[in-house]
Every structure is written in C-alpha cells, then in structure tokens.
Amino acid sequence: MKRQAIIIKTSGDGKTKIAIDEKNFHQIYGYINRDARHKRKFNDICNIILSGLRNTDLYDKENINSRCNDVTAMKFFKGQENDRLYCKEIRNKQEKVFIVVTSELLEKKKNQKNKQREINVIEKVAGYEYEIK
Image 1 (spheres, rainbow, N blue to C red):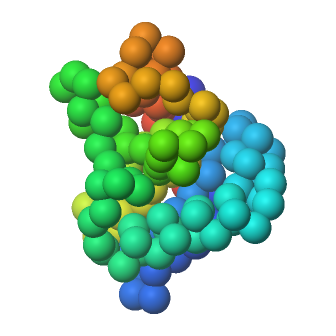
Image 2 (image 1 turned 60 degrees about the horizontal axis):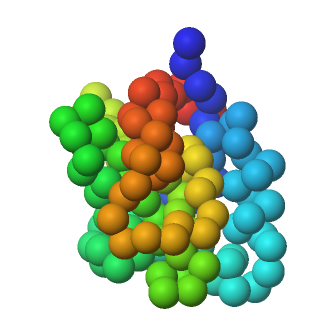
C-alpha cells in the first residue's frame, strides 16, 4: 500500500519539492516547530536541498545497502542532540521533478556509525512508496 505525502516547500522553478509523510506528519511537524532553533535548522537544510546544493554535514545519503540507495538523512545538531529526519528521495522522470519526503524522525542518535536502531529505520523508509498530494 502506498503512503501519502504532503508537499510543504517548492523551489522557485518548481522542480524540487520537500514533503512530509502524512502518517508521521504531526510528529515531524511538531519536531520542526518545537522551537526557533529547530525551525531555523530545518529551513536551512530545506534551502540547501531546494537550491540544488550539497552539504553532507546537514543532508546526506544513508548508503547502508543496495536497497537503501534513495534514503537520506537531514542531520540536526551534530555533536549535540544529533537528531535525524530520514527521507526518501523520489525522482519523477516524466515531469522532471525531484521530491524529498521526510518520512521518519529519530531523535538522539548516540553513535557515529549506524547501529541496528538506525539501520531498522533506514530500511523501513527504503520500503516506503509514496503518492504525493
């Protein structure tokens, strides 16, 4: 069964979009809007993605195996809380649109390498299929 995702931000040219998983919307949106610090960091990461830039300290692929090639992580407050928003990247080749769906929130990542806790979430996100609203 496909999951639903709601678009919340779009680039100026309309070719890149940020969406939130509908089932986890309240948890993710609540985290983003927890305080000004979280909101600012989320907006910074989104601006990097929407501008087509790359900053692996804030947003990077989670290549743990071949099934997870399209899973990425938004990295919040490395060296502090070290929270992650795991995302699924979708490329619509007909419309030439790139969508990043924020799928799962993982707070307080405690290690540098991905342990079983992170691997389980990454593999879960890799299995998601989305219908965009």
